[in-house]
Amino acid sequence: MIDTKDIAIACVLVGEKYSLDDVSFLKANLQGTMKTRPFYCLTEVGRNLTSFPSIIKSPLSEIASGWWNKFFLFSPNRFTERFVLYLDLDVLVLQDLLPIFCTLEKDRVYFSQDFIEGLSSSMMLIDTQSKTAKTLWRGYGLERSLSRYGSDQDLMETLLIKNEQQLNLLNCRYHYSYKYLVNWQNWRERCRNPSIGLIQFDEIFSLNFHGKPKISEILRLPERWPLGRKIFEAANQNSSNQTDTLPKCSSP
Image (cartoon, rainbow, N blue to C red; front, side, top):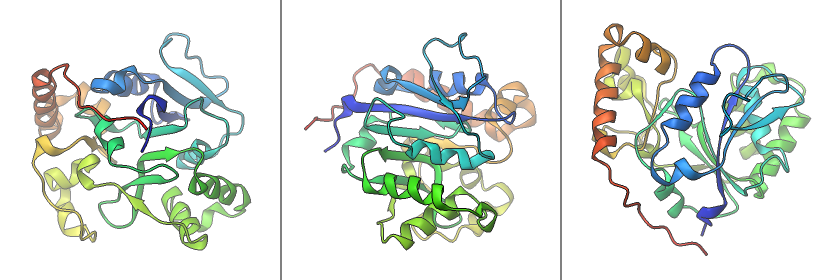
């Protein structure tokens, strides 16, 4: 069983697509126990985080393009804590995420599910000492032609299959798609993942705003994104109804 006192949160901020405001929003939006956990931001060496003293800067001495920087989450000795919950900067946290760890085993890396098919790297629960984390880091370092892959997720899945590593997927309610929830451009019809289905909003732990609109766009122009605005209103209502009595998860 995972020791919940040995958990950190992490995000990646590289380039101009997202800003420190997005990092700050993600951290502020954490619920319950996770608000107290160390929060890391993997980012460029020269980026100044002094205005955000509660965010731990984890500088990247080497910068890759876009999503490829997520592989640095698997690099050895980057975190003080053994277990790392990674979240994309387009994630809206709706509930305390601690109970997810209560259902998981050590020595593994868990991925959220892509709502088309396969794994998603938008949310990952990483045992940094696991064989899988070492396999992904080593495989990324040896790969000389990233352009052969459509995304970081494609390479991750390829490395897991090549090295006969188990693909551990989280229940979809832990990390749900905004586009599937509102059926954006018939998104549900495009879904080829048989384990995905409609669930109640209050059962969702976190919501992924992949693509358009970004969370910052909804906050800035809520009238332009009425469905997004309704989700934020519901999320705020849910948050106000939560108490400080947190679910317990025993440590080993």
